[in-house]
Every structure is written in structure tokens, then in C-alpha cells.
Length: 409
Image 1 (cartoon, rainbow, N blue to C red):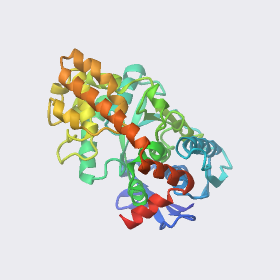
Image 2: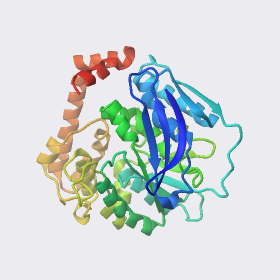
Image 3: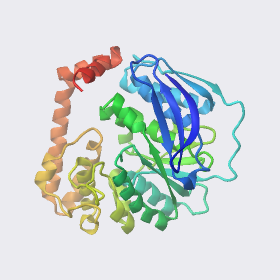
Image 4: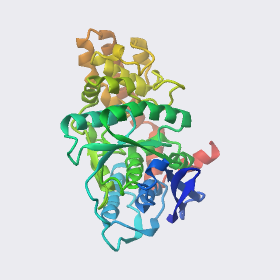
């Protein structure tokens, strides 16, 4: 893979940075990857090759490229960190049958000019994890502390891909920004569209790729920030499971002038929910849904919504938030709720608090879903389809899966 033709330009009034991505060993068409922001932050946006390197290294590894060649200078810290991250991913997902890509680029010939002062931001989605990161930061750090969060990077084109939904999300999070004293920095990109074009399987994004992709957005603003917090999804010991945003991965996506910090690893999802439940505006503005209807933050029906509503109910606050269409849940809904590898770790800790609230019906339904998930998982592990997927991934560079997508799109 070659990443070249780095340039700064404008898309209407928006400042944009762009690069051309050329696949070498895979039959994929060339792609123009861009990142944009509002005119307010034009002076802060830089055409940083690190953002593009992070955006495409993991997909290149997954699809069998031999190298990533950049027509630009990069920080040796990031190069070494990416090799470490790829080594973990190869160990977790390819059982040692794939090696990290070669990263071919000149190292920076001089040290970048240091910041006049340290400034911290965070990657903001409005979900439980990022809201808890902001709330904990405000409770624990004086505003004058260099680790106090000053900016929130809100990205369009990743999990939010509707312009209308992003406008509504940005307006809703603006209330959070005003109360907490942070500045919202919108980022617009076609990165996720490229990912969907290559691989519609959400597992690659969730389990290998998401940390690197969102960390790349932070590198666009090294003129303004030198530390960005990335909210953890799991706590110890659940975080020991392989995942795309992980304490063993995220810190490797930093450079001399941009550190990436994996934040909140000691807090469970229920702990984070309690933090938000004690903050009325956060409770009213929480947004976890990827496909809400116009005019609402959350659909209240998908698994992400239902698991979050369960946690809020478990802390006694579901009837006090307007972020969801309903203020109660039924045993039938929980029993039918889809559960996957990402949502499953959040369920066991809900049983006791639900029972303490007298909601034995919901506690019983959660226990049923946990039991069913484990039985399904054991059956899938021994199934012939799963064995074929593993062989394809380990020995055929996922070419069989790629062929299936071409024949049966």
C-alpha cells in the first residue's frame, strides 16, 4: 500500500486534508481519504501523515498487504508503536500466521516545535464511556491542571453517518460543552465509508481497527493538543480480552507530539453509569444509539440502547431521563435482546442491583440471556462454519471471505 499526495484544500468553507491510498497486493481501487473540520479550527488542522497512516495500517494488515509506504516523514515513536500494536493483533487474531506490515517512510529529520503549554482533549461520542471520561475528569482534575480536558473531538462518518443525526448530536452535546467548559471540535471523514466498501463485517472494526482509526483523528490537531484521552470500553479484568481499543494498543498510536491515553480502565460500565446518573445534564444527553430516528437521541430498541437502559434502571434513574423513548423495560424485551461479544461483559454486574430494586423479572431475563449466549458461543466454537472462518483467516489471508462478498454481495 502507498499513501501519497498529501495536501490541504477546502471543501466549500470547510478546511480539508486529503491523501491518496493505493493498494498494491489487493485488488482494491485507489481511494481518496479526507478529514475536514469547521472554519473555526482551520488554523488547528494539519495535514499530518500520522492520521492517514493510522487510518489504513490495520485494514492493510487484514487484507494482506505487504507494506505501507508513505511519501512523508513520520515520528519513529509512532512507527515502533504501530509495529507493536500489529504484533498484538497478529497474536490475537491470526495465531502468529501473519507478520506486522513493513512501514516504509523516512523518520522526521527534526523534532517538532514543542507546545507553548500542554492541552488535553478527548474523543467524544456522547456515549457512556466518553461521558464518564469527561465527568470523572471534571470531578478529579482542577481546571488549571494540564490534564484537565479542554476540547472534545466529535467525529462524523464513524458511528454517526447521517448528516441530520450528526447535527442533532452536535447540538445536544453543545449543552454539555457549555456546562463543562470544553470546546467541541467537529471532524468529518469518509474513512468509515471506505471501511464498509472493503469489509462489511463489523467485527474487524470493533475488534482490530477502531482504536487506530479514532486515534488518527487526534493527530490532525497536534497544533492545538498534545494529549488525547480515549475512553475505555471494558475494565480490568474484562479489558484483558482482545479488542480494537485496548490498553495494549491505544498508547502505541501516539507520537512525540501527540500522546494517546486509554482512560477509565478501572471503572465497570455500571460504575460509569452511576457517574453519569449523578449528573443531570449528562443523563439527559446520553447518546448510545447508532441509528436513532430523527429528533431523538436513542431508538430505545437496539441492543446498545437496551443494555444502557438496563444499567440506568439498575441505578434507579431510567424514569428521570428523557434520552430514551421509554422509562421502563419488560422481561420479554430483555429475553429477546441480541447479545454479542461487546455487550455480553456488561450484563453479569446488572443482576444483583436489578434484584435489589425489586426487578426480579429483569434480573431473571438477564440471567437467561447470559446462559443462552454462553450456550450459543460453545456451539459456534465447535461449528463447521467457524472452523472454515479460522482456516481462511489464518492461512488464506481472508481471501475466501472476500470471494464470498464478491459473489454474494
